[in-house]
Length: 142
Image (cartoon, rainbow, N blue to C red; front, side, top):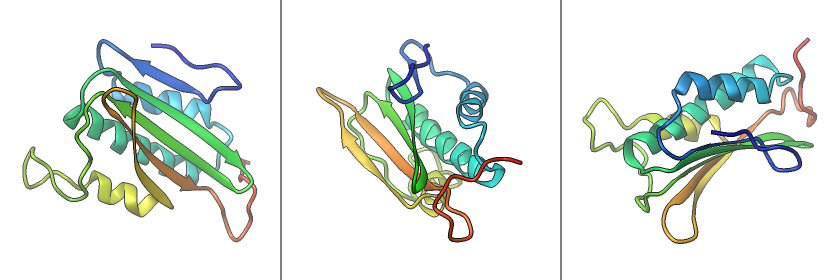
């Protein structure tokens, strides 16, 4: 597992085994440490839900990237997996009490979708707006 260096977006690539979600959350929080707490929490929830969905329904290798725009302030979370199976909002093959992760992603993001990867697999992405009170600059923690 490695962290991409600038100018590429920060990235975690997981080829053999999925990284524990707590480790991914720590990595995401460190990469976006200057983001306002509320916005960071939204990005953490979106990244956790997208990665959990990949772990449960996708196939290795997995990867996650963060792309940040400062004006307007937004963070794009991209999660790769090797399965061509497309995500479905509100349905899970794992039981009736499951399947709400993408509903949460839909509520917290301004847009989300999928892009095919070369060969097989897909990238599921979501953009979280970090605008606050009409300002378009990224808010920093005090």
